[in-house]
Image (cartoon, rainbow, N blue to C red; front, top):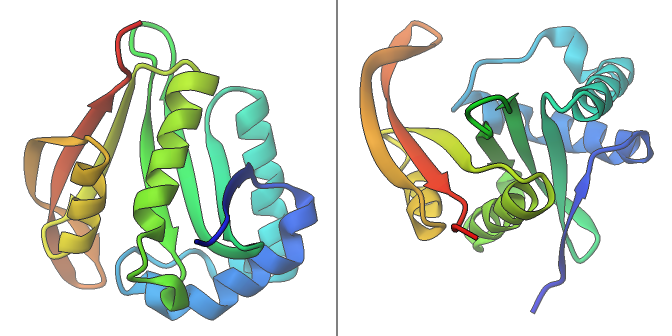
Length: 174
């Protein structure tokens, strides 16, 4: 059984994260809009890591890396943290192409939910998935997310418009 570890992104991850993003760029951009070209430089990734550190410090967002047996396999983000009255965040994740199909997304989301609900004391997580991505929908529902909405033609990728399904999960009452 592989050893999985979820840790906050840091500058110590710079070279490995840069290589991960470079290697998976085309794969990720088939599902999400491209990041700016400058992001993919070593300096661009360093700036993104520094922005993630500031976001965490200010309780605006948290970025984590999932490693399988010490190898970077996935990223998980808790963004748009809203504390007052909501105590929620948006969950996003991406698994590297060579790590697909082995349950790593499901494990990454489970570990991120533990961080969100236990360590960060959030109450609710939101996530979206394109209708055309049944694997992502399965990851969310396997982790207790429930669909609460369907937004039609709300996400543009290239020249095409896509529907998004909206999901939520709540912390267990204490």
